[in-house]
Image 1 (cartoon, rainbow, N blue to C red):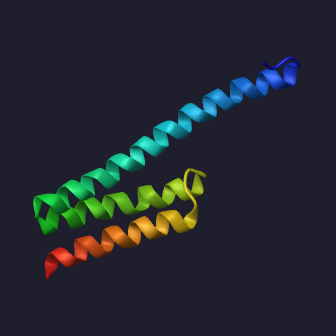
Image 2: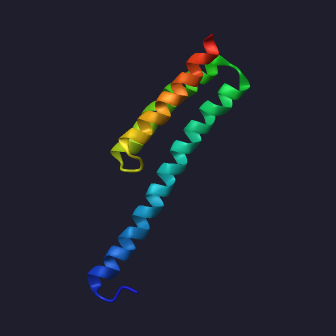
Length: 88
């Protein structure tokens, strides 16, 4: 348990930041899920549009410290590969 005033403040701040980060993580996952659902649905145009919307959201997660740059790049790359494979 935090005893000093600074430790108490850090605990409060940490709770607020955790809630914000959780919302951001959930938002990113939702965008990814939309792409995956479009891929599963088989509509290439919808999948491409969903991917176009998801990509900046995923990379925004990097700038906000939610994900590591490599993780985000890997996810974008794999989604792009799956969307591109639908065209063939």
